[in-house]
Length: 292
Ligand code: G4P
Image 1 (tube, protein in one colour):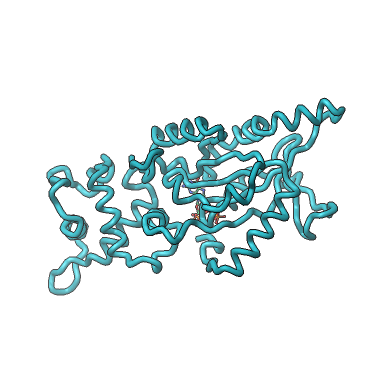
Image 2: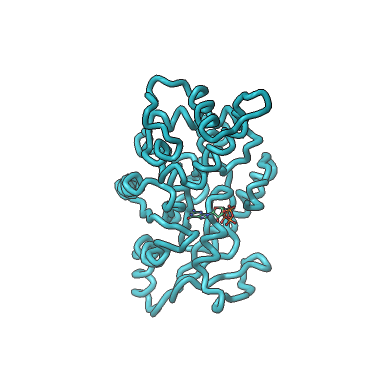
């Protein structure tokens, strides 16, 4: 579990974070925003647009190994229609990361060409990473930076201790990512973040959260979910989520003394299996508001 997951956001902290990001933005040419491909809406920071203003941006749909591939394609298309470059990545295995330098080049093409026209041969571009906790920022940085060529340097204006990692020829990345808060005042956003484990379970009652997840899975009916919990003979449209939780607990032999079903244990198991993508590659949020 990531350490930054434990960050408690409070107004003073948010202001400080914002200021730090604003200062770092002055040092970079573009921003790589990492979001979770399963929840591309809820895993975004609501204030980012205002914060980065016109700075070119690449969106990384991370954890794409756990998201529905068709849904991810739809998201890429959605962002592209908005004029934003987005690529699917899996920072656990490194899949898709080879497309990153090209994506940055695309968003910085105008700037690079301008500099070249001014006589600069191979201008070096710099980027920074931003994203909410647990979205995969550290995994991205570890995967993409060629550590052997990382440079420790004190440049004017760079906070002491800042490092620039080399990603590829003429592309460098600030080692410290900007950690941003999600839109936590929205209940649905909170639930979706909790489904994926991006926020701690303690924030929402575990059993209630599992029931909300079952509400969603009942409607979506992913094949792996049905197979895994042997639900092919159940009419998912007419069973209540609580009955379904009991049924799954019973099938897994989760009983407490007296023969009652241990719904708390069943709830934890369902959430764990969803988070590990054992119930299928499921995207919770679709462009336009639906689910897949
Ligand atoms: P952060 O810096 O943004 O807070 O996120 P971090 O990289 O720490 O990643 C949070 C968790 O998400 C880690 O799992 C990490 O392995 C996992 N993760 C990151 N990117 C991907 C991805 O593309 N696919 C998958 N499947 N997982 C990803 P963890 O359980 O906290 O730790 P561990 O399993 O790595 O030990």
